[in-house]
Amino acid sequence: MASWDDFLSSLDPETAEQVMQFYQGNLGYGQYTGQYGQSSNPYANINVSAYDHLNAKRNPGDKLYADLVRAQTQDYLQRFAPIENMLAASITPTGTTYIDQDLANTRSAFTGATENVRGQIGRQNQRFGLVNELPQGFENQAVGALVGGINDTYTRDQDRRQALLVGGLGPVAQNVRQTAV
Amino acid sequence: MGGGGGSRYEPASKKALAERAAIALKRYGEVFVPLENQYIADVLRSDSPENYQRAMGRATTQAQGIYEPEVATRQRDLTMRGLNPSSGGYQAGSQALMAAQNRAMGQSGADAGLGVTDQKLMGMQNIVKMGQGLAQDSMEGQIALAENRSQRLRDQIGYDLGDRTAAGQAVGTAVGMAAGYGLNRNNSNPYGGV
Image 1 (cartoon, rainbow over the protein chains, first blue to last red):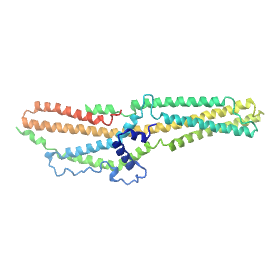
Image 2: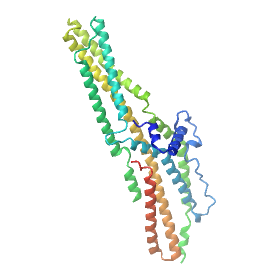
Image 3: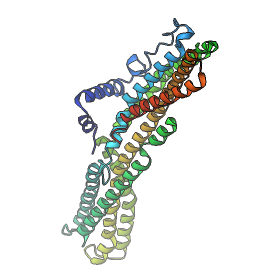
Image 4: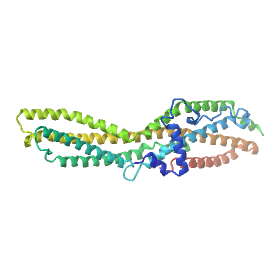
């Protein structure tokens, strides 16, 4: 599974440090107080009056507009591009990097349920004074259910990969083509 | 000659529009960016072990809650009919249903776990879409800026050389190439990993 730490370790150390500092500083629950400080506003440094002293011949509107575009680009690169990279990196040739976590969850769900029901049957048999034995074929059924669950998990992961490939990353290519025309 | 020089002055409306855009962006940064960040944080933490356990535990308990009354009813019926709990008939009637309960509990729990992963990925897709709105604005802005530069260069060279049509076309081609190069460079970074 691609955890946040895995993602950070896939970046070069300098970028990883910047990304970590950014998210720790801006995304932590403890940091979010509802009071919006300078650090959480990527557009706080835009100075609307920065070019007021320029006359029209020196294109003050164009310069201010350029500042806005730069700020938007920076904001996009800082906050959203890492998530795009993370999502793209989660796609593998056969599914997604989340398969290991999902398989572990599936095994845990089925083995947990089997333990639960096995205990129930045992307690019930004890109440009747019977030897604590399971119904015929119970273990086989439990293993069969687990195998079915694992197969479902693989199938679901493959579906997820397809969904990510065909649309999960958004209409990136179309946007680029449209704006480049 | 020299009549085109007046067009090199930027209209006041352009600066006013840029100021309005700047104010809107600052406001976006103050009001919406912290909310977006909070959403991003929620999504990134949505696949925590606690979230998986909570969702899977709830789903398993739900399946158990549906099967157990049926198992109890079936057992009561079998006992009333005089079947011995150690008999094959009793086991087939009662404990086979418990084996089905086992399967249902496992499937529900596993499905809930997969659902948590799905939710995280859907959340990440939403973040990507949010970011691409911003990227789209940014790219369009860069194209607009390139067009502005192109227009200024056309004006300038037309003014300087006097032959506006031919020179304008030549410069347009050159600036178009430059803008295309800039776009490709800009886009190669964020999507390089795709």
